[in-house]
Amino acid sequence: MLRLEELGEGERERWRELRAATDAPRSPFMEPEFATAVSRVRPQARVAVLYEGTSAEPAGFLPYERGAWGQGRAIGLGVSDCQGAVLRPGLVPETGELLRACSVSSFAFDNLEADQALFVPHAAEEHTTYVIDVEKGYETYESVLRTQSPKFLKTTLAKERRLGRQADGPVRFVFDEREPAALRALIEWKSAQYRRTGRRDRFAQEWITRLVGRLAETRAPECTGTLSVLYAGDRPVAAHFGLRSASVLACWFPAYDVEFAKYSPGLVLHLRMAEAAAGQGIGLLDMGRGPAEYKDSLKTGELAVYEGEAMRPGLGAALHLLRREPVRRAHGFVRAHPRLASLASRALKGAGRLRRS
Image (tube, rainbow, N blue to C red; front, side, top):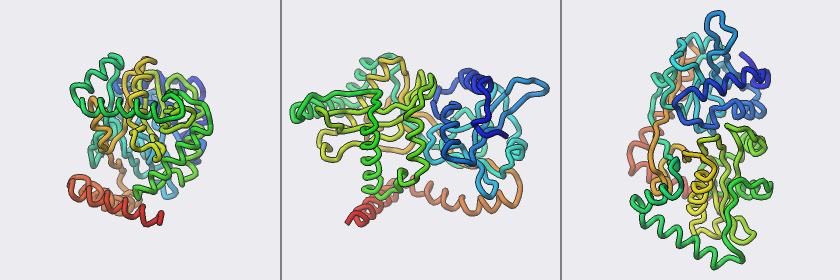
């Protein structure tokens, strides 16, 4: 087992080669640059390097984090939207042996790729991630929206024009903004959104803020931190920070200035992101798991991701399961019952209002 910083460039290149050989979308979360960035802010991050027989060339990599009590988890668990091992096609190691070699009793995941034969059998739940396909260009995507969500598209474009008339300057969009003040504004908006909706503020966790800062400076062909900003005049009104590869834009942290909410700047931002991504040859925007009205309006398709935990026999794994599984089952029960999910959402928003008062 190695620290990510200990990987040589030859091993990193082999990682990229193995990843490119799969049929899965080339998510930047599965690249060595993302794992390395996490390792800088999460000291327990490690990578298992797998070999076959006497070959000197790696046959696979499993980035993971090791907890204080020996439990393992996908690297970046809680913020990573794509997880799993990077293996030679057809290679499926014995799970228990791999975990033992990693000195962990378990491996938890919440956004496992669908083709991860090593861990999918251990999944407890299947979730949906929503995607926008712009492989054939933005004009084709917009024509799909005109058929699929005609009112949504017409209304959003009208709001964009109205925002331009009301602002002190024209509406403009920057796909890859490098201005630090814009990233700070996005984090402030996103933190306020978490609190407003009664959800845990991810940016209150120092490691997540530091991770985003590191990734904002990462410029690699298959993992580039990308800050996209919608401006009204010189004022940013919506922004998104995510990661992109040559073929996938992973949508991660979108937010907007609530003063401009009536213009739906977040929706306008997503349309412009899709247009810019298509212009750069990116074929897929991954909006992540979790239902949302805006995702239903923007999406062209869905993919499956999995949540669960692979474990090897032992007391540590059993105790860990007893602690985590009831919580997971409770969350799954609420998600499976729309009325309960709606009540839970309203309760969270009410809690958020109480905290602000």
